[in-house]
Amino acid sequence: MLDRTTVVFETDGERGDEQFIREYVLPAMERLRERDWCQDVGFLRYGHAPHNDGGEVRVHLRGDVETIIEHESNRWETLVEDGFAYDWEVVGPEDDSDKFGPKGEEMTVRLQFLTSRMSKHVFEEFDADEELAPVDTYSEEGPVPVGWWSVLHFLADQQALSPDEEIDAYLEGIRNRLWTLGLWYDYDRADERIDDLIDSLEEIRGEVNSMTSDGG
Image 1 (cartoon, rainbow, N blue to C red):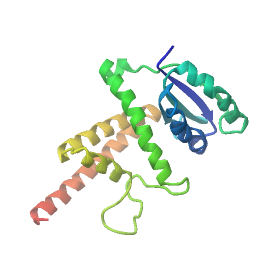
Image 2: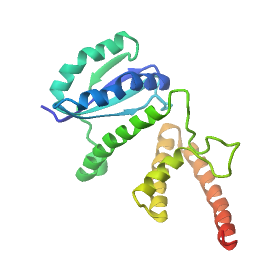
Image 3: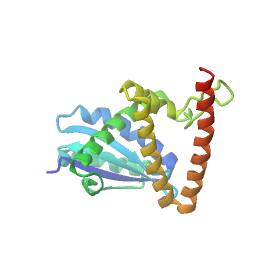
Image 4: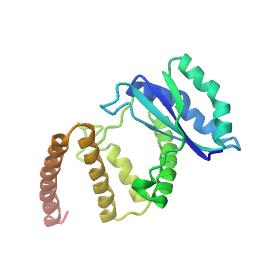
């Protein structure tokens, strides 16, 4: 008996991922966690990755895995019959301890389940037709942009991260995403973004200097 496993669902792309998550994953997060034999439900999605021909949602399950699969497998077949997924497969527990180390892997698993619960609230807050931009949702309005960066900043503030700590967190995120750009596309694509970042940092240097020298 396993205490954790992953079920991979194939969809028709990024929009298919969204429909599957809203149709099955979000309700399952509430429904299954009410059962004694299910400790948690989480997910990751990959339909937005350029190398994927279709979509993919990986549903993470923690608890009495055999009971969960027995309870849910008919529902998964129905999702395929109704067109929300092409197929599904239980692939077993994922183990990235070679990348993160044993304690890092354990923390990564906890964070994936935690952020899944957080993301559930995001799906409930914004319907499928309302988008929060990465940086500036209302570019025609005030001088300070509002977007996904705001969510990350508010979370950092609520956990009392200092400005230096918050910058360090963003820097590691930038490093990780640049690696991914290189893997998904090629080195040139990542190199272009690095040049863009250098230009942006020089621009920010001037902005910060102007603000501090003006006493603002």
